[in-house]
Image (cartoon, rainbow, N blue to C red):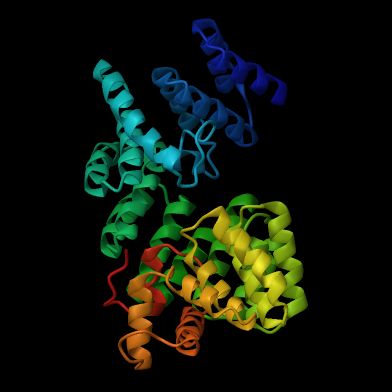
Length: 404
């Protein structure tokens, strides 16, 4: 199967993918039995076609994939261009979005596959922070009744969530789940929205519903996500136990980072380091794992090792402001007050302003000890949250804070 994948990718990249190649590929898809394992392969071909701007060929393949009901994890539809363009935010991706949007609009004039073009335009508009325009593209997809098209809705779930419009998120999720109750990714995002609304019991019920009766791979994904939510809530023992179950089921990415965090919060430093080492060995760009491991080293009195991890976290993505929180405290431990002040300045202003006011600290320039107190309070309040997306801040910072 992998040999065939490489052959098709070479044809696409070389500009030699023509009608005969497409006919052969679609026959392979239609004739495959038990296709779940092959879905990832087909989605890589879908992405390669998108990157080559062979949109109509990609969409014909996409229709076949959806018709086979083989998407246990549809993350490729969150960013269909991953064969060529990194999924992590970068200046390259920003430029790409503008150029690709123009190309898609030109190609859409054919009138074919309007829902696929709407999906792709919506993703690009969302990345360009034009979320209201993106949600208008969702309307065309939401009108499609066959359940197989539910997976095309899930990139749009994030747009109201990022804007802290939790009711808007739920309004997208509930109709989708009526058509496809097993759409676990959508159900888990709705659980996040409920949690951020303040309905923790309702959120945890949705995680349980997502796991009930799910196939093994999907169930492990849900258990991992559920464990992460328990970590956010400060329910560390429950989080560890949930993540233990996910590990026993064969979960890999992310589970070790969050279980390591739960172990750290429970005071099991060696267990935490073992899990966090494993997380980083599986994914050398796991920012949260680097942040948590840096925090573990700092709490164990190893500031030099903490610095190495936290330097790595902010080098991977400068938006990772929890890395600056922990690194500022690490620099204080090393006697570097200028470094502490520099990292303090990189924490979002709305965060430090809210915490500083609640602590009753005076206006004006803060001492090094006062800055460290603010950073320590951030860690204390956040419990198990080390994700830096603004939509999670109301969970620990308060609901009156404007998150940017």
